[in-house]
Each structure stands twice: as structure tokens, then as C-alpha cells.
Length: 343
Image (cartoon, rainbow, N blue to C red; front, side, top):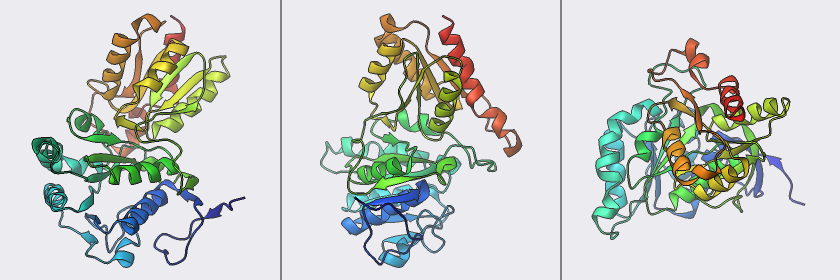
């Protein structure tokens, strides 16, 4: 039987390790970067403070020491330049994995990501791959200051040519990152900051699910809840509370928002007849609106009630003391569940 062990401190990569490891989500991302760099010398990691400091959350700890600062290096505080560098390196045959230090800092890089990164492969009729995985610590739940807790996924989802990934578990963090790095298309890899310290078992030799497949985290019969990232745990807690009231909630973790596994979504909604979408970003034109529209269009005759949304508010992200009031939580989700069950 394979031994489950605690992962050594990040940066200690000298000795061989078993494939089955217990680690935090942050350590899983670190391990994914390490293994990708070990497997392919074209893989480069760069961004603000990623080398000497090891990143704000220490996610890149040990990479510069192991592979040298030619493959893991610090950049100036210039997000547009970081993505521009990544595009140029990809054209020259490298596999860049740039980091945007916080989600709110991706705005200066918006033009590069939308106008060039997302379009270059199609612009060259597929002759030039664009294997750039942009790591962005994202979303709220950590009491951070302004510009450090944003939900940017809808911007990237509206940008044709970008894949969008949001892991919720250490295992997904590892494998979705490895799969993103090996993809010839650019990927916005959004890491839920509130989940960085969540622990779980990671099998570094076998992925649980293929890229682009959603995961049913909690089977249920009465209501389908669609969510991703840090809110998966919130949905699971709500599911336990709903069970005490006789309502069986099915929680679907989308994992990849583009490509979207609509087959798993439709199978679940057809079984339950009811659906609630949950995301952190503002309600208007959030990803929940797109999911609700598509489910209503394609599964109208399977629905017993309208698709509802449990989301953040249509206001700028609040100061840390008001964060818990702004973010959708168990109560907001249960309110939606009660409404769809009443119809």
C-alpha cells in the first residue's frame, strides 16, 4: 500500500518522494511548478517577487534555488510588461508561467491578455502556439486590502481564445496546473486565495479527472448547485445544513470555466430539476448569468423552477471588515435553495 506522507518543506527538492502526498493547495501549486520545470526545461516562472522571496504566498518558494534565476526570476512591478514578455517568450519556443501577484493587479495587463495573448494563436492560423499559463491569486475571503480581492473570471471568459481554470482542492491545483502548462493555448489560472491553506491528498502520478471535466463533490436529488474555487466548501456546508431540513443538494465543482463541462451540468440539472449558481463576483453579467441563460435555453423543459444566483453585490469590493457581509455565504445560498424548492 502506498504510504501517505507529509510533504517536505517547500524548496526541499533533493530526495525522491512517493507519488501520494498530503499538502496544502499552495504547496500543490508549488509542486506542480517544480514538476513542470523538471519535466521541460522550456518552462519559465517569473513575476513580482517570485524568485528571491518565493512569492507573497510562498507558492514559488525554492524554484529559483533549484533551477536558477534564468528560469525563475523577478520582474519589475509592471504587469503589462510581464504578460508582454511571456508572449514574446512563447513565440520563441518557451513555455512561460508568469504570475500576477494579486487579482486586482491584472488590470494593467488587460490589454496584453485580451489584444495579444488570447488572439495570437488564431491570428497565426495555429502556426504559433501560445502556451502561457498566467497564474493569478484570486477572489476574496482573506480580509485583504483594496485591489487584493477581486473576481476577474468574467473578463477572461468573455475573451475568446483564453482558457479559464479555477481549482478548489490541492489535487486539482496540482493537476489543472500541469495540464494548463502543457496546453498550447493560453490559460488564466485563478488560484482561490482563501483555499491556499486547505490540506488534501495529491497523487502526482494520476489525475482524478481530465482537463475540462466538472466534479460532483456532493451527490444530491433535489437541487443542483454550480460553483467553483473557494465557494465549493461553502456550498458543501450549505448542503449539510439543507440536509437537516430534508433537502438533498448536489454540489458541482466546475473546475474549468472554459472549457465548460456542460454535459455534467445538464445531467445533474435534468435529475434534480432545480439549479442555483454561486460565485463571488458581482451579480450583473457575472458567470452565473451566462450559466442561468444557457441552462434556461437548453434545459427549459427539465426545470421545475427558474435558475437562481447567489452572488456578490453590484458594488466595488468592500473593506476587509465588511467582506463577510459582501461575499455570498451559506445563508445566501440556502435562501436561493429554499426559493427554488418552493416552486
